Image (cartoon, rainbow, N blue to C red; front, top):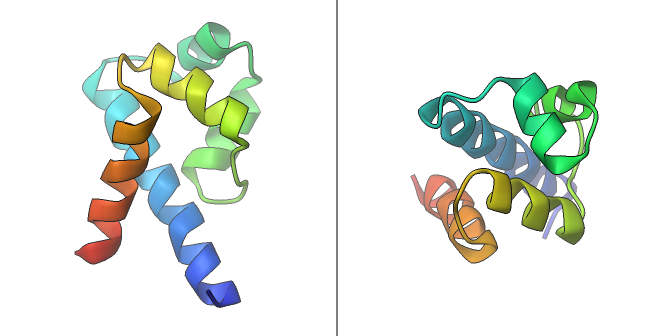
Length: 81
């Protein structure tokens, strides 16, 4: 996997995260609160400027009422489009 592939995945994760958050009518502030994270970190994730840890993926998935594997699957689907 190249550096550019990694950047693409990080950006796709952010896109999927934002779509799921908005579909659940949750603000960045509320999502951060549910996950015990900072709102600015949520913003950085959504803009593809940070890469989440596995723990963060589990926290986000739980707050969005989705399994961690389904969250990653949605990123994989976006990668194939």
